Length: 214
Image (cartoon, rainbow, N blue to C red; front, side, top):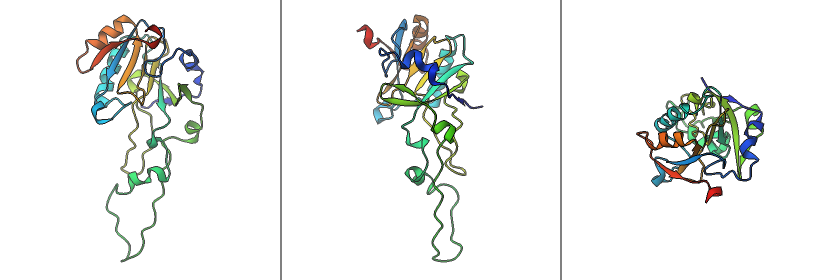
C-alpha cells in the first residue's frame, strides 16, 4: 500500500501558521524534544532517514499516539527526483538492457524524458510551508511512512524518494521534522516518548530544547 495525497493542507495550520514553529525541531509546545542523528551525516547526506532507521523510529512513534492509522507526512518539494524532464533524464540514460542500433551507424532515437514522480493533481496542489520550505502533503497509516507511490523513472528504473521531512499523527501527540539543511531529525512529544527514543537500540539520539525555551 501507499500513502494518499492530501489536498486539505489546513490540517497543518496548527503548526504552519504558528510563528514559534522552528523548521529544525517543529512546534513549540511539546513537553520534551530529541535530536535523532542521521546516518551518513559525515558524508553530507542530510534530511533523509535510511529505511532501517525509519522503521525503528516508526515503531517507537506508534507506541505514543492514539491515531497511528491516521498520520500526515510532508515531502519537501525541492528534491530533483520529484520532477521529470531533461533535468533527470541522465538518471535513466544507461539503465536497463543494452540498446543496439537497427543498422550500423544509425542514430539512436532519443529517449522520452521521464515524467514527474506524481501527476498534476499532486504536483499542482497546495503545499505546507515551514519557514521557507514547501512540502507536498500525504496521509495514511504510520507504518506506510515514506511509501509515496511515486512513478518509476522508467522500466526497471525505480524512483528513490526521500523519507518524510515532516510527520505527525492526527492527535498531534508528537511531531518529527528532518530539515534538509540539518544532519539530524528533530522530534517533539511527551517525556515518555523522549525516554523511549533515548533508550531504543539502533537510534542515535540526544536531548535538545526548542529555541523558544532557550
